Image (cartoon, rainbow, N blue to C red; front, side):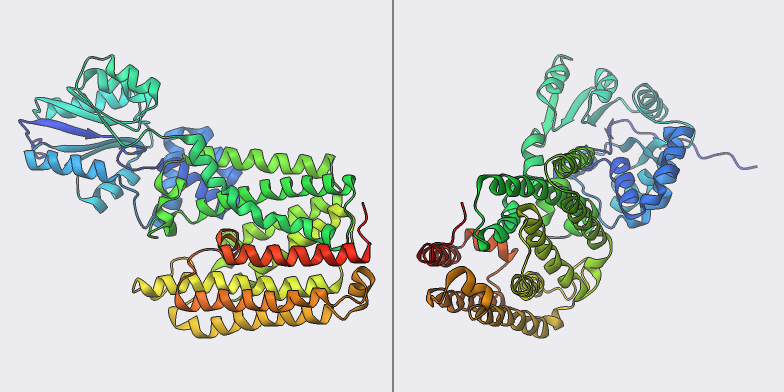
Length: 492
C-alpha cells in the first residue's frame, strides 16, 4: 500500500476565515432553510425531523436539497481583499466554518481562494470549542507560526483569544468592546449593522401608498362619517402589514436574482445587512397583527380578502411571476383587491364602473413596470431578466398592451361620467369631465417615459415622487370635492 501524502508545510501565519456573516454576508444554513420552506412548505415537518436527529445532520440534508439553487455567493469585497493580501504574502488561507462541508467545499471550489477547508460533518457540528480544536490542530500539523482569525459573532471569541491577529466583521458595540479587551491587534471590517434601520427599509413603508386605494370606495360613495373612516384606517393598517410581509417574502424568494441586479443587490436581505431570521420573525409578527385586526376590528369577509391577497402573493412570488402576461394580470388583480377590501371595510358595495376602471388602469401600470424593467435590462446589454418570463424583444408588443389598457380605462371613466350612478352623486354637473383629459394626459406621459427609458421603478412609487403626477392628482381631488359640495351630497 502506498503511504498517505505528508501534510503540506507552511512556515507562515495561517489566515483562518469563518464563512457565515464573515466571508459571506449571509447565513447559508438560515437562508437555505428559509428558501427551502418558502418553495416547498410541505417539508416543514420533515425539516423538524432532521433537526431532531441533530443539527449537523440537518445541515447536510438541507444542503443536499438546496445547494444547486445557489448561483452567486454574496462574498464581502473587504474579505476578498484581505485574503488576496494573505496569498501575496504566501500565507495559507483556510476556510473554517460551522456550515456543512458540502457547502464549504462548494464555496471554496467556486471561489478558488482557500488551501484547506474545515467544516461541519454529519457527526460533528464545527462550532465554538470544536472549531478552535480543529483550527489549532491544522495550524500545528502544517507547521504554521500562528494564525489570524476572521469572524463576526460571540461564538468566535475562543478562537480570537488564541489567535495572533483578530479580524472582526460588522461587530455590535458590545462585541467590539469584548474583542478589544483581549489586548490583541484588532481590525474591524464592514460598517456596523443597524438592523432596525435595515428592517424598516426592507418593509418598504413608501410602498404603503398603494394601500391608500382602500379609501377610494368610501370617498367615491361620499360616506365620510367617523366610524367608517376609523374602519378604513384599520383596513389600511392591516393591508400595509400584509404588504410588508409580502415584500419580505419576495426578497427572500428573489435573493439569487437580486444579487445579480445592479440596484437590487443593495437591498437589506440581498446585501446581508438584514439577517434572514429577522426578516422571517418580522413577517410572522406583521401577519399575526393583520389577522388580529381582521378578527377583532373588521369583518370575516375582510379577513377572507386578506387571506386571498396573501395566497395570491405567495403564488406570485414562487411561480406566477415567471409566467408572461399572467404575472401582469396578477399584479393588476392585487391592486383591484385593495379597492374591494376598502369597499368591505366601509360597507360600500362597489359598482361595475370602479371595478372595470381598476382592471384596465392597474393592468396598464403593471405592464409599465415590466416594460421599465425590460428597458433597463436592454440598456445593460441583457436579453432576458433573471426570474422573469420576458425577452427584450417583447418590448414593442408589451408597450402596446399597456398603453391600450390605459386608454381603455379612460374610456370607462368617460362612460361613467354619463351614467346614472354618477348623476345620483354629482347631478348634471359637467365639471368632472375635466378629469378624463387629465388622466389621459397622465397615462400618455407615463408610457412616453417608459418608451424613453426614463421610468425605472414602480409607476405608483414614481407617481408619489413626481411633481406633475402630484399636481394632476391634486386637481382631480379638488374637482371631486367642488362637484360634491355643489351637489351637497357628502354624508358626514
